[in-house]
Length: 119
Image 1: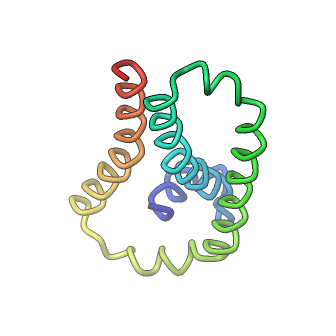
Image 2 (image 1 turned 120 degrees about the vertical axis):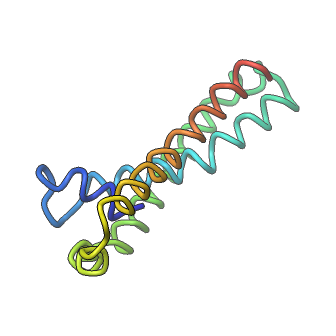
Image 3 (image 1 turned 90 degrees about the vertical axis):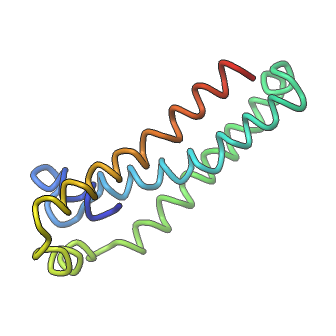
């Protein structure tokens, strides 16, 4: 996933791939925090979330910073290694993997929106 996103933003970021690291970090944060919000909302109601929003904001910031630092150290300098690994991919395989990454990014957002509407 990192390589596909980094390759998409290569013109702007070059090999540092800060945008890809940021995108993956936000994605991880989304995958952890928003299901917790949906579950909390389902069991305790919307008013509970509103009353405790001041507690949740610092927790969300800490989780986001944790993932940002984790992914920065995890993927720092890995673009060239991954580029060498995937340089011989066929166009069909590259396109398919790009579509799968896009779906992996969009499906949780769609599920969250549907869950927010129907819960």
